[in-house]
Length: 190
Image (cartoon, rainbow, N blue to C red; front, side, top):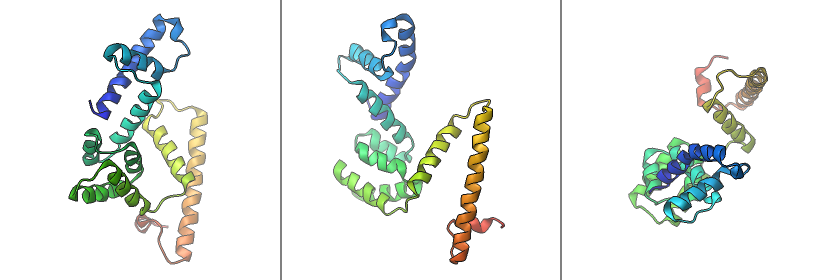
């Protein structure tokens, strides 16, 4: 099975875990991934830890965010977890450039990891605080509640206002120095 298939199988066990918990009070308080590991061991005879289950599920989520070419390479075992992580943080253009360079002459896992890291290092990085905020907002938007609470609505409005202020400050700095920070700014009216 590929990394993605294994993770999909263990994720699907989540429903079974909840059913088991309802019938077996000794499982209350036990981490879900540890219960999944127990199920996998009983089904396959393969000893696996809960941490491995959790790590594989997280890796599969990162693989799902890659361009199709890299997803195929990851599923065929040609990428290290470190390379998958670096690619998952890269934009599509960087992923494509790295894949094109790699496809010229496929490399070992270690060489591929090094190639991806070098491509990622040449990509300008946003401030870590901004990148973290962007990821948090993306996760929230990906699973928007049907009826956001008043507190959520207020927080969203505060975030929007802060983003507007930050955008104004960046545009002001760029204008003062004769350069545009964001190419899409030229399409906006002031």
